[in-house]
Image (cartoon, rainbow over all chains, first blue to last red; front, side, top):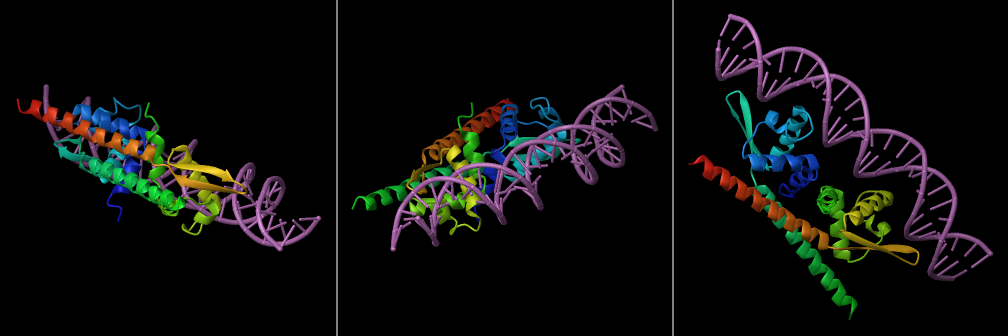
Length: 104
Length: 104
DNA sequence: TCTGTGTGCAACTTGATGGTTGCACATCGG
DNA sequence: CCGATGTGCAACCATCAAGTTGCACACAGA
């Protein structure tokens, strides 16, 4: 319906999650345990956040032997940015229309 | 630091709030009581949502006699869309760098 | 095989948030 | 002036999400 916009926005709304994404982007690839050194929360909390981010399509995680490596996946984010821009444009359009009508 | 991004994302993350914004955009201007006919929640809930949206800078409300008229204000939204696009670009850049290093 | 390190699962606490109801106050119209 | 309509405020409830702790399980390396 909203094509994943819901999940992306919800995921990005959390500051810890954004920090996590940033840390991941700079590292390129990392495990939950490693990321626990970047963010002041437990590994468990990080795992939950990564699950949310993965659900939103912003992150991709795969098992590699005994550890699980995560990495950023920016497609969905770009799509959401586009959606937002379009929404803003539409609002402007409607507002302009209203204004024009009011002046007649 | 995050320059209002936090508030905008949090505000937009709620489906009811998005419906509210849409209703507002089509109406051009409306009161909380009026909007209560568009969304299946109490006027009080709507007031709270509008407060959140106003805090995020997505909506602008002013008193007009006995009633309070709200309207959409898309600047902040557009700014956040830009922010998101930039973020996506940066992630791509870093990922490309990582990949290049890995191949040397 | 045994030990250390990394993951996964589950229960629990706590604070924020979406929502409601009830009532008091302001204001427009007859 | 009086009634109807619109706002504001406060208390309250339920749910959800972030975070923690504890423990069991998997696997690499000596």
